[in-house]
Amino acid sequence: MKLLAVLGALVLVWAALSAWYYFRQESLIFQPSVLPAGHRFAFNRPFEEHDIEVEEGVTLNSLLFRATKAEEAPGPGVILYLHGNAGDLQSWGYHADLYVDAGYDFLIVDYRGYGKSRGRYSSEAQLHQDVQRVWEWLAWQYDHGSIVVVGYSLGSALGARVACANGARQLVLLAPFYSGRDIGRRVAPWLPPSLIRYPMRTDSVLAACEFPVTLVHGERDVTIPPEASRRLLELLGDRGRLVLLPGAGHQDIAEQPEFQAMMRELLR
Image 1 (cartoon, rainbow, N blue to C red):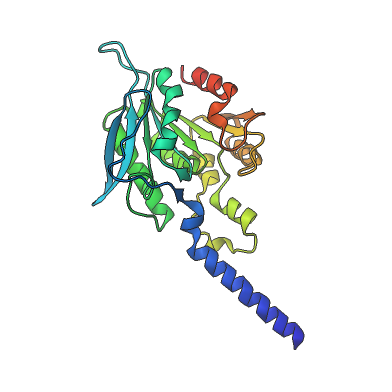
Image 2 (tube, rainbow, N blue to C red; image 1 turned 120 degrees about the vertical axis):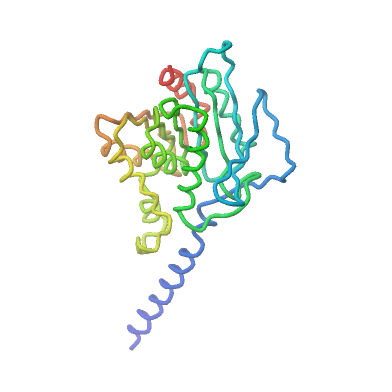
């Protein structure tokens, strides 16, 4: 009887933890900074602010930095940058410098609930739908073959899906995770995979992707260990390239001189 009581208590604890995780996934995944509607962005170069409608009554706030070009001379393309799960455009906008200096226009967008974007997410499908709408807005102004998608951490899953579905010029994933399910197994191994509402299957998306993909990972990354990129590289085979940065962790990839030099070479 004591054994049955202990087993019953363990089942109740497991059920309570599973229910807590199931209903709290949005707060665990999304860690936005919120800006007032009247916030005025400040950067060291010109930019345009756009609100991109993703569904009726819902817009995502975005910033478009344009490279300086000779009159009537087309630039090499545009970067669609999908940032990580924390912060807002004010804290992410400086990433434009590297790409604009390389001659590319640069679009970065805040997800729902981030910065001046309003709304919230209740499913992974909404995330991908929003990014697809952003792609369509961008493709209305730029040729598909000139769009380079760069996704960081959370943005790597979103970038992989939209780039492979629409045929980007290039896809670069910074600190990518293998899948949301893989992260779930690592942080909550007791949770059944069926209860992970954001599976984010980057692995299956890249396995079917038909163009070259560059993976970049800091060797000191403890948030998403570089083994995730190594496993993704195995799926890509000769379509993939992995750049490991010895001195980088999870949040300082952009500051690494090796990364900056690699990106300048890649974007030529």
